[in-house]
Length: 422
Ligand SMILES: Cc1cc2nc3c(=O)[nH]c(=O)nc-3n(C[C@H](O)[C@H](O)[C@H](O)COP(=O)(O)O)c2cc1C
Image 1 (cartoon, protein in one colour):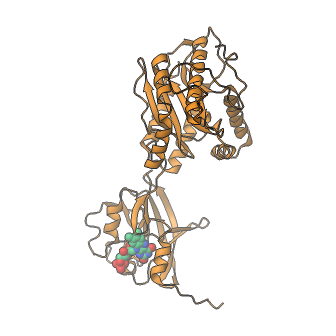
Image 2 (cartoon, rainbow, N blue to C red):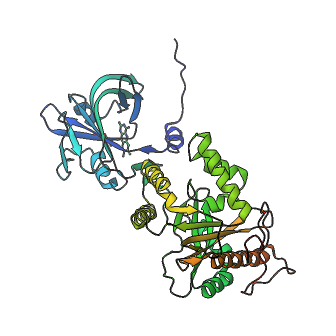
Image 3 (cartoon, helix red, strand yellow):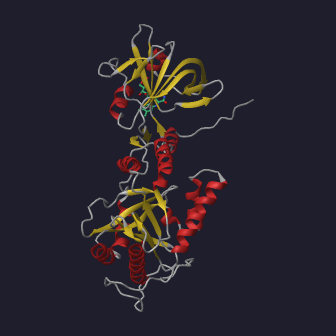
């Protein structure tokens, strides 16, 4: 078959291709003299599962590859986000590249670089000529993830890292928009915290998949636990209180994180419907199970530190899902029965009916009678009504002054003040 002859200006080729990021690997081996040799490669790719093949594309003029290609085996070292310095060293042409680099021989004898994310041990097979590059195919004999951290990325001539969502706000723009919104609720949450001697907070969406704490007030003996800008993943089972009032498309996206099982989706949808009908979400902590609580707190902290790989985040969320029954999801309260309430949340809706923010009460007194819980809920909902009035700029509704106002009935809500027994 006649190959079409095309021509593109090399600068243009580089410029356009530069918009496609790559990972960064160092392919290492031993030269004829048994000396370590290695080159930085951004063109590393998986090729075939069966048989297991990978490939990279060295330029035909590479002096390093001319030495490397005689090696019996290669080690492909996937560099971590904090290895840009090592990358620069290994991308140089000098002969002393390995003098200050920590490595040990791989099972096949090739240099394994310390602290790389993954090591792929392989044998070179075919080197197919493709223009000014080779497509070097390699047969994989063993492979390991050596360090569960995010990889180094190369993009438009610069190094960077993959940015998974951590609990720290990413963009100033996002956080400032959230903080401004939350500011409308400040007087109300301060009054709530003061009156109920607890923690009252405002949570806003930081992005499609995360909530962030945008304002907090403390009253009584409530501790400064929640930090502004801390993030909570909105991935099942987390984020229910927000999702209960989210648009259909957002709910679908949220449900998709739970997998494809229709039963799970149905259970989650029922939970959202219940929260929506009540007009609030209530989380009860099971008092005996402190080990589980600590486990959950540890997982939340791990999420808070950020930098998790998507795989590590998935396994963390799966573990959280297992532990979540510790926070039983309850909405029914008997006046004289006692409850350990971990959190109460209600939405503030914008004039178009979409959720604008969540008001949340936490650090409420343990072992409180149901009648108190009902009072807290009514008070929380009246605060949300007051914030809505400000948000909608409606002068006929309650103004921004703190203090009890009548709870409003939310769209889709069947709960009234009477239902709450308040
Ligand atoms: C991020 C990055 C990616 C690279 N990717 C490749 C590649 O895929 N193929 C290649 O031949 N060289 C690539 N290089 C260049 C070589 O690593 C290295 O600079 C070169 O091998 C040194 O020149 P020499 O081989 O002539 O000694 C890359 C360099 C960097 C910094």
